[in-house]
Image 1: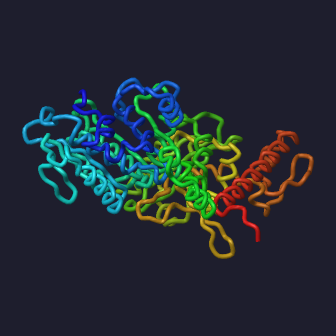
Image 2 (image 1 turned 135 degrees about the horizontal axis):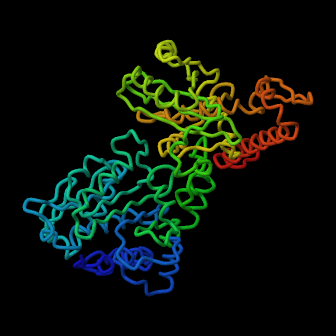
Image 3 (image 1 turned 90 degrees about the horizontal axis):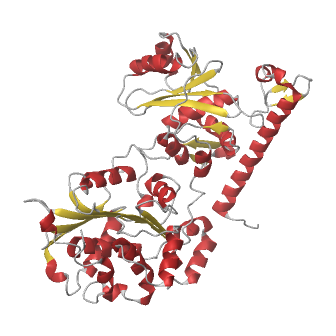
Length: 532
């Protein structure tokens, strides 16, 4: 489908959007518009900008219909998104030729909340005051603007139910990095995008999906698409990644400098377009990715390996019932993690886990767990010949024990998107007496059931590193004392010799050092290096 009026022309025509976008400072946005139209870049500065912002050496030679727009605050994202939505609905085509009787094609412009949607609506209404556009409006209500060409523009908040069942010609979103990322949310970023694709399936050119935001945490759909698209010459879609000053040359430098002085971590994300590390909170995203064996969703049982299992029990209503199996390393291996979501019947789940997990993995006869409803679940597990043992560590302590192992690369995880998302979402809190606790975010839809089972199994398998448990005293085969290792742990491996034991101790010491360095860097990133 060839547009009746291209976006590039609309941005430069004084009778359309030219009153705003013809200004010299908007040349960066006109360059992006050419990529959306599939037009060649004619100026050297346009080519340089496109290569810089997309990370690609070969730019697309056809119209771009899947675009991730990551630009800093005050760059002009909302104004550009509003212009694209008006162009797509009112100028791109006579949509009556592409729709059935009674069908209305809709362009959806979604904000992160009602206030954000109101900002987008004001931008769109302002653009529609142009001489050629105002007569095209048939009807206008609070959230809906209908045009003579059979299309409508609907501006609302990001609700997956709004996207479903519609004949969409475009779905555009603002501040998508700040949308919900929890997989249990009915309107998470993944759910909204998942609903958008079928809605645009019958559009002649496949529909336009354009999601914009300033960067935030290294979780969710936007960060995943950034990793997938930025710098990928073979991808059909593009990720446009640019700091505020690149897209808006008129932004005063002192505004950015002042923001950096007040809150460096926040300002780097908002103006310099640097993903926030301090909000990865507990475990950095790149650490989790580095410990993940992508493509390996479960490891098959093998003879000669001692497996341990850890389950996060559930009553069957609110939380998932999960179980994970791990083995001692190094590296410590996570072999499988299973999740049954509510509603469920605990006795049936326990029977299923016994047959599909415990028996295949070395006929496991003992499963560790936290102390949640331990009496009830012990009886159910006992009926199947398995002892349920309350772990001596809390879930928070298991997370803390796994952190240095992950930082040192002494753990191998299976490929589970749920596990990675839950690990990334964990938050560290400091309470009275400087005691640290780690848990999931404090909102109703947040869960950590899969992460709890996985880290519990790994913590049990690893026997907890020596620098974390100085209360134990053990000896090597030569009689040298080792702090923090149980006697059974060392005695069972004494045949490995002193060299192997020194390697283990050195690995633990290096993991401890990395752990402390990571915490120091997080502290500096959050509070800065202040002098008192």
